[in-house]
Length: 283
Image (cartoon, rainbow, N blue to C red; front, side):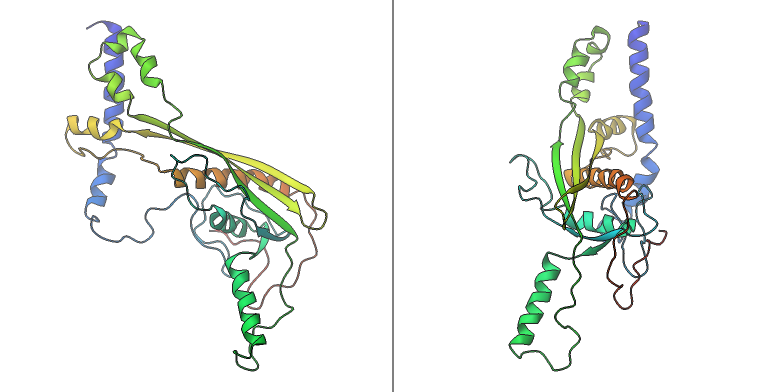
């Protein structure tokens, strides 16, 4: 076999064995098939935030020592759908709200469903429906000093298209049986997002940041492993759009924190009873 073809074949086998190394982990999950496994699935935006601080947050999440202001998250008025062929989450705002609270950079106030619930309770009280001496009173809402608006710049499901054509132009690689077909199954997915931070008093945009994420989906994984035996059809890294976009927003939030750390701390309302307004706890 010519040296060039031998090197290419060796490279493919190396990829195959690297994928086969994932076989043990695949086997560990086989016993979970048909079961509901808590804590599995999801994206890089994980965990919780609240009185106990940030719990189970991504290790990559950049944090602040103390919050600088109260902030409300606003839906992008232009939506998030890039094209009809893309399957995107309805809204990234819930995940960004979690990131903002976990980072400890902001105290988050609700201007969405939670606010509608507050208004409804006030209306019910005014109509005499609620009991006397209740705990939900008017005039106690906290103002949003900043507004944070997320934006999805683009999401590409096949950024690596044309790779098979490049391989087909190289004689040494083109002659390897099935190689072009295998490369056609490799998908590069990319996403870019942005976060815009506005001062609600002055309307000035105080900070802006972009974030990006990429994944390589090797559709060849199942085929290669199947030929080697063991782990047949397992595939590898089939990342969906939502997970990639969540990772891009995490990246954007980390970039935004760099700017937020340089801002002066606003005078904020007292913390609600039973909560703490200080920095997020380690998680």
